[in-house]
Amino acid sequence: MAFKRLYMPYWYLQNKLFGKKRPLQTVLFVTDHCNLRCKHCTPSGHGCTGMKSYEQIREELRYSYQQGSRFVDFEGGEPTLWRDRDYRLNDLYRLAKELGFFSCTLTTNGQRPFGDTLADSVWVSVDGYGRYHDAVRGEGTFDKLDRNIRASGHPALSISMAVNRINRPSLADTVRYARDNPAIRSIAINLHTPFPGTEELTMSWDERIEVIDELLALKKQGYPIMNTRSGLQIMKKRGFPKSCWIANYILLDGTKLPCCPGSVLGTCDDCGFGMAGEMYCVMRLKPDTLRAGLDLRLG
Image (cartoon, rainbow, N blue to C red; front, side, top):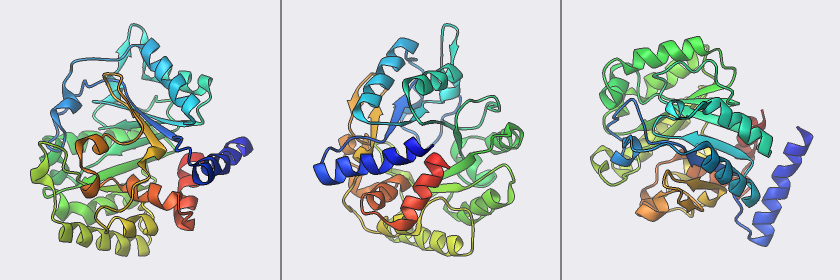
């Protein structure tokens, strides 16, 4: 643990003082197979066209590690559907640890049981409470993910919500759900980013600011919102400078991107990903963001 904590200031100094722009986290897409067709998702997110081989993923992990990354999030599609011969997702977590990654994350829609995961942390996408989630992801999906969350027994399970025009009325209830469900540690909030084909779900900028102010008020009341005050405040500013090179992305076709795909699609000014605000604050040494980041990654 001491070595891991020492790596963080070493990584920061490399980037801040010497302009290296080396990633700390890798988002690695392993499949586009999915068991849902969510309204906010672009067609490429559930094309059901391919699964990467174990060997390809190993090389991509090695590449990311050499670049400086020490945390990895396997994404889809729905990553729990990934398989290659006898390999399953847990084999990728074992592989990442063998290569030296500090921790691994599972991001899942929660429609399949995941209690056996070897991931160090789990993020379940909960896009609204009850019927609001179902309106985005399909009838019955909220009840199923709730059952799987409660049955998982994972000690580091959190949920994430992408707020859009459909589920906006459910924000407070979803935050309360995170507080009242003993299986959930925290909730992270994103604002819908207008990727091509999903623009109709985007809130106006005034609505986004209203959502952020509501989150700040809920956070002040003690609700377990992962986003920091500093990160939320900068998200009010359209087009703020991004430090999203902190995470490198490797797409399903093997394309290696030094930052979020939104930079290719031209959505950065309207970005709603909460981590964009947190990354901005990390590079500016905001104390609340640094504490939250260390707790999230090394807690």
